[in-house]
Amino acid sequence: MNCIIIDDENSAIEILREMIGRLPFLNLLQSFTNPFEGLDFIQKNTVDLVFQDVEMPMINGIELMKSILIRPQIIFTALNNEYAISGYDLDATDYLLKPLTFDRLLKAVNKASQIHRYTEFTGSSINNHDKNTNLDFILVKTGYNTIRINLDDILFCEGLKDYIKIHILGKTIITQNSLKKFEEILPEDRFVRIHKSFIIPLAKIDAIQNNRIIIGKSLIPIGDTYKTNFNHKILTINV
Image (tube, rainbow, N blue to C red):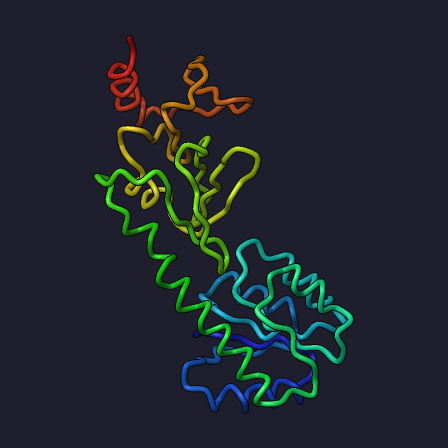
């Protein structure tokens, strides 16, 4: 697992660095005393695990991790357990008290490794579904969790660079992937891409108005590139 350390104390970083060096399945990419440099690194690189100090002068470590939309696994480190509940509210993998001991660190890292192996396996599901199977759901990796989404619940999918917002009944799920890959695994008889940024389920269309699709309260544009294919799909279901 690729990991980083964010801690404002160099002495704490050195202790963690030495312990991590004993574990061959951890690859320490970088360490940061400036939390915002660490945040920037997470957003630009593949990081599986963050050792995050809680009490820092620039920003609380909990608040720093809250600012990340798609978070890696987090192991918080702190002098006391004052912020433990807040840490677990962020689905932190573990919360370690300083001074750190290797046995306790190893327990936390083994847990992180098990989660990583599981999500690596199930997280690949989004790319491995066969469009010709009759699955009624997909498995989508979000953060370090993998969740089930029923296809009937999807209202529409919105592409945002390297992320997808899946709008379903009652909430929105964000996952790191491309809309093109997502399009490839959705059943083509039920879903259609109508714009470079949007995929919709045909069954959820409430109305078509001035080159826009209406789904509930959402107005979704039809792109010129996708108009012919969309019209063909509509003709096949019109009666």
